Amino acid sequence: MMHAANLINGQERQGEEALAVYNPSRYDHVIGTIPRSSAADVADAVAAADQARTIWRNAGAMARGNALFSAARIIEAHRDELAILAATEMGKPIGEARGEALRAAAILRYYAGEGARSVGEVIPAGNPKTLQYTTRDPVGVIAVITPWNFPLAIPMWKIAPALAYGNTVVIKPAELASLSAYQMLALILSCFPEGVLNVVIGRGREAGEALIRHPRVDAITFTGSSAVGSHIAEVAASRGVKYQLEMGGKNPVIVAEDADLASAVELTVSGAMRSAGQKCTATSRVIVMSSVHSVFRDALVERVRQLKTGDPLDAETYLGPVVSASQKESVMSFVEDAKRSGGRLLIGGNLPDLPGHFVLPTIFDDVSADAPIAQEEVFGPVVAIVSAASLDEAIAVANSVRYGLSASVFTKSLSTALEVVDRLDAGMVRVNEETAGVEYQAPFGGKKESSSHSREQGRAAIEFFTETKTVAIRSV
Ligand code: NAD
Image 1 (cartoon, rainbow, N blue to C red):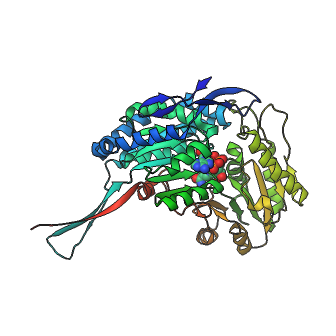
Image 2: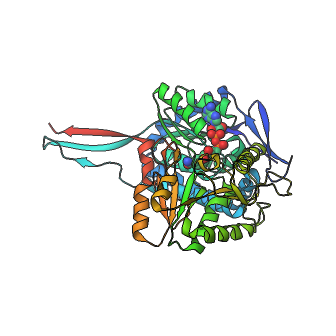
Image 3: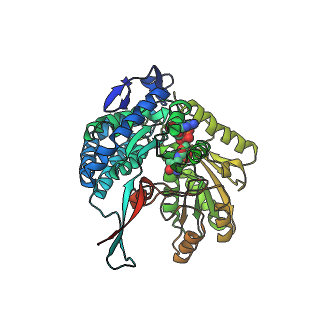
């Protein structure tokens, strides 16, 4: 049993009340507790982060980078325990969880290297005796608010660049994944001066709300649902602080006539079913050209039939449970609605006889492009197949949702690939690759309602976590 605590100014601190954390793979199995923190805990964490700003900024970029390198080594050394905890807490299969722990370490290394890279440019000035250049200032105290589906990687892809560029941090991880975040961040806390990295655990509407409204928070970076994201945008705009949002997706794959069908099936299954479909970049719509529809559909169903649903700690498991009872209810309400509204259920659509929040991998065929299951984010192992008579129609269907995060096309034709890349309204377009799995060194983000139109990860992160300062120096 693990008892997570807040981490404020380098010290552990319990909240007034403890909330139980349940294992989604087994009903009623409590694996730990997390504090239910109050606005007073948040205020202390923000005060500590505010206090630590000067020392961290003055440490210089290279020393900050060295601290991040040390943190990466620690996480790598503890990858197995972090993976087991994450798999137990939110149900991701152990292999994926181990990959995520290693990714958190790789992200730290990437941003550690930023400490030795240039941050500005020299720009010609009207007066030849003037040196004009740009540099970058840290923004200040960053509020980091994260979801449960990548309990290690998402906190790290926000915290690592925030710290590398000289900011201090207060993170409020998701209630359903706070043990993992706490464990990972407690391990690396001593790499940084006190107050540079603070963790406040609790409910969104309490601790989260207090954090986004705190007057000494200078910027908010959020990943989660569109509903909470738009609320955060309103609060941030009313306070005049910088914000960044990454939210939902309804990610399509387009299967062209000339696709390598075996590879398209494998990539569709991996994109749709890994992490039980609980990735913002998960494949949830398959738009297939009519001429290959039946062959592709049959092969997809056959492959899905082979997937093992079960204990996330079993190395053979492809899908664990969804994260909670309410997530299971929400996924099943989409499934029941699709059954009623004429989608043809090919496989799944029911619950296995397992003692947790498991949903069997589910495929519906002949789904109308405007049905809820083809429009709304389901966040479960559910795929809707939509048939298209032409590439134009496939692209129109792909673009007909309010989201625009990731999209894939399977084709051997260069011209089809380039046309789809050009015309899809998505922040990330992938050819003969699954919709998930974008690499940490490349910009990540969406169009339309998937994002605040900013980008995370890679070099793109510098835009949010710093502010450009233009300097002119004239010799007299
Ligand atoms: P959520 O929006 O319910 O919660 C996200 C975080 O916001 C949690 O830490 C929660 O406590 C906090 N929160 C809730 N209300 C708040 C408030 N009033 N003020 C401040 N904080 C508040 O999302 P979730 O259920 O944890 O995660 C699933 C969602 O995340 C899905 O919609 C998924 O698509 C999205 N997601 C997006 C990306 C991406 O990069 N685009 C990545 C992963 C997940």
